[in-house]
Amino acid sequence: MTRRKFTSKFKTKVVLEVLKERSTVQELAQKFEISVQQIYTWKREFLANAETVFDKGTKSVKSAAEEKEEHLLKVIGQQKVELDFLKNALR
Image 1 (tube, rainbow, N blue to C red):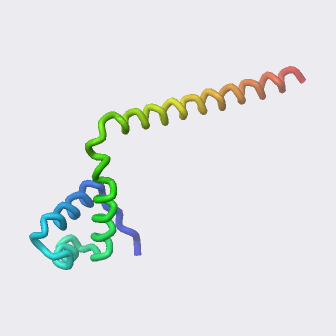
Image 2 (cartoon, rainbow, N blue to C red; image 1 turned 60 degrees about the vertical axis):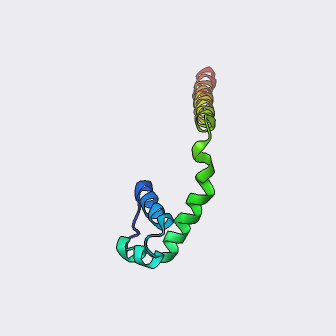
Image 3 (cartoon, one colour; image 1 turned 135 degrees about the vertical axis):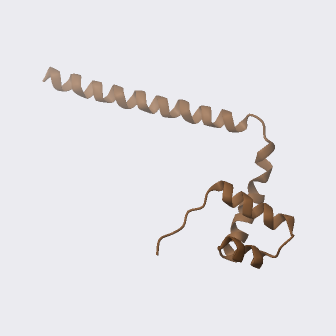
């Protein structure tokens, strides 16, 4: 049996349906063909991260820092390769 993968769009749709409280979790589980426990897990994760939705700039600053770190690591790796090449050329 293969494991199903759900998009974040689908997960958000399910969680919003749960939060509307128009249907029970059991009904939604049957409707979307997923387990009740999975719905509760997605709901818990959604509510835990909901406060970050309205944070301004923190996400872009963090990703910019991560990009800079990745670039620097790439440069270091390239320089190490060049240094090793030059060391071998001198032998």
